[in-house]
Length: 333
Image (cartoon, rainbow, N blue to C red; front, side, top):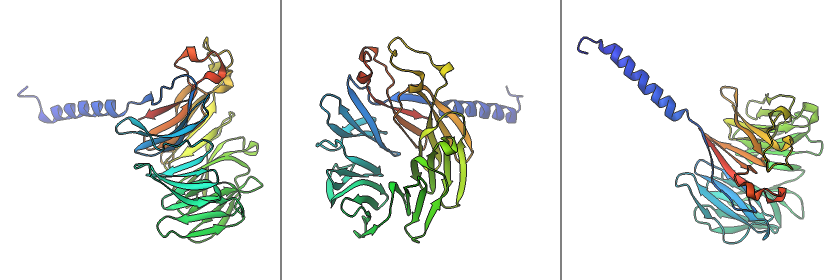
């Protein structure tokens, strides 16, 4: 060992260290954070770097409650004591907006404290210090600044409206999308054809298109004005979501991939799906979840992908279709 060249030994040790690093950080895992009992169903509301916000209901009782899962401590707590049944909920950072019984509430997710922002509104959304909702009487869109406590109203705003920073996006009656820059007040109609679903984060807008565009997933950079097709296959792609750097969506599996289980007599292959992840920077697509059951929503944030699924781990609960629980799963890289 005395005569062994030091630079060769150093290269060898560096190689072992690199292999260990890639083994440790290259791994992926999927975990369930709810493990629900019979008849309990969950649905994701929001995903951040610190938490997962979701609502859960007991099928018989019908009431839904809001829960927060801390990604650091791996603990779950109920955010509000009162139910949030039939409430529209959006969240960003430590704040959530709740539209319930024509009232708009602002909720601090850390403290659980709520305050009434507006009476006579519905369908709220939040991004940073801006909150938007629809006024029930005038049907105008209200934009409220949490810092200045000032509100402005916008007319002729269509459906499926979403906000991200200074970008406001909505769908017009033709199915096309309209984009408003809240700073410059400039409006633009995007010729993406009729769209079914939209999501927005930062300057990135993702949509699932209609039959005219083969039900593909499209990305539009609002700052650059650039349009890119992300998923273009014979299959239907749907449930798109983005964090501004990555995009996720769902596709049904092929009939040849379907392997029915003893308890899945009522489930056809069309109810089984895959989840795909697209990196905007590298333009690479990867299938991260294969052959999952009844995915109802999927979100992405950083190295995590979260989705709601009817995947059954308790066959005794699956005698009837309506007895399937809805659990929440995390994919971590």
